[in-house]
Image (cartoon, rainbow, N blue to C red; front, side):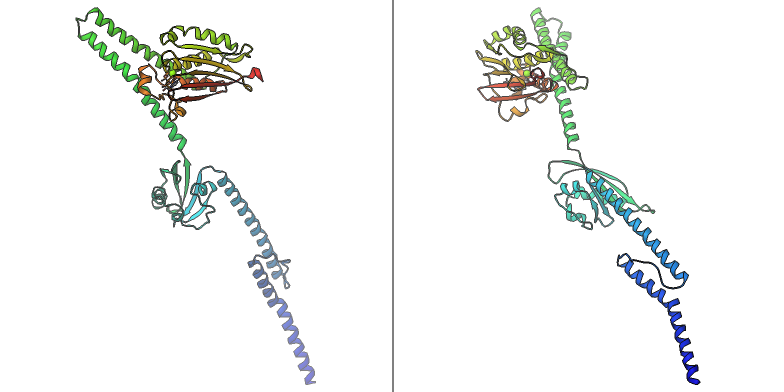
Amino acid sequence: MLWWIVGIGLLIVIAAAFYLQRLWLRPWQELEHLLTRIGRGEQPRTFLLVGPAPARRVGLALEQLLVRQRELDRQVSQDTAEVRAVFSALTDGLLMVDSTQRILICNPAFEKLYDKSPITAGTPLLDIIRDSDVIEPIREALDQAKARVAEVTAPDRKKQLQITAVPITDQNGKASGVVALFHDISRLKQTDEIRRDFVANVSHELRTPLSIFHGNLETLLEAGDLDENETRHIYEVMKRHSDRLKLLVNDLLSLAHLESKAANLQLDEIKLREFLEAVTRDWAKRLAGKNLWLELEVPDDFPTLRADERRLEEVVHNLLDNAVKYSHQNGRILIQAGAPDQDVVLSVCDEGIGIAATDLPRIFERFYRADRARSRELGGTGLGLSIVKHIAQLHGGRVEAESAVGQGTTIRVILPNPAAN
Ligand SMILES: Nc1ncnc2c1ncn2[C@@H]1O[C@H](COP(=O)(O)OP(=O)(O)OP(=O)(O)O)[C@@H](O)[C@H]1O
Ligand SMILES: [Mg+2]
């Protein structure tokens, strides 16, 4: 009997233990197991916990939490990929550093600028950039939590960069990092230099005639007893310089117009041979002055050229003017026209002083004169070839120069000829 009671008691205890284990311990064990797997980044097959309803609800809530977290993860990595794509598309170098000046992120343009690739997150900025001119604005933006702009030379020593360092501030206004943009301003600098040179050149060209006018006017006003010859001489000098001024202003206006957006062409069909014969007829006197021999070589069956006649005249006048100015006495000047391929090539060739190889690439620049003293003496301002180049470009063409010092020069104007297409 006693054994029976003990047996039943034991059974009850075992059943109670089994029930308790199922009710209280097993859900905890399963929950622990689930959390461990999630922690390892695994995806559990089921979230169904064995146990009472509250335990099953915890399992379901956990599943929802995990789904939500995965969705957030996906969104974050998509956002990061988008930010990286924007960074990569930037042609300017971009860099983000933390408060200890370690690199958080940088784009390929920055890596290229500093010739280091790949730059991993966490790299100290000083390992990449040693130039204090670059480090300084970034450091100041961090220390003072204020944006800084600086102009520096790129590591390749060729480009000019503008660095804009902007702090990333926290709620207390302290900088927790800096975003720095490295913008290439070489072209801007170059344009600025060209503009400054241009102003300096124009002022320089204006100074001589103006001071001559001033001096001569003073003489006329103050010296009352000038004889007729002296007065005439003064007027002649003033006339010569006013002619020069007029030429300069005309050339400047012509260039300004050619460079402006308003520049347009009045295209006509031009019979090149007749055109060149007519233009060169006006040059007889000047050619005779130096006893120069001018030859025209244009094939009889030369196709008509579609171009702006007035501007083409300007081209020929400028090229002939140079050929005459820089030719020796008794020299020969040859004007040739040819149509190899689909372009028309118009060249003016002389046997004059020639141009040094160092000057040759620059003769089409505004105000560039290979031999300043001689050109000025001959009344040149260095704008003629620049006008020729612009006119050629306006026609969709280009210019070329070939020269040997002491032997002569050939300037070629190459124009596309739609008529031949
Ligand atoms: N045929 C040439 N022979 C030798 N040098 C030349 C010749 N053509 C041009 N040059 C050189 O190139 C420079 C630029 O020529 P460009 O025609 O632009 O200026 P310029 O003749 O001095 O002045 P401008 O044409 O404005 O009166 C000249 O100053 C000269 O040094
Ligand atoms: Mg000239």
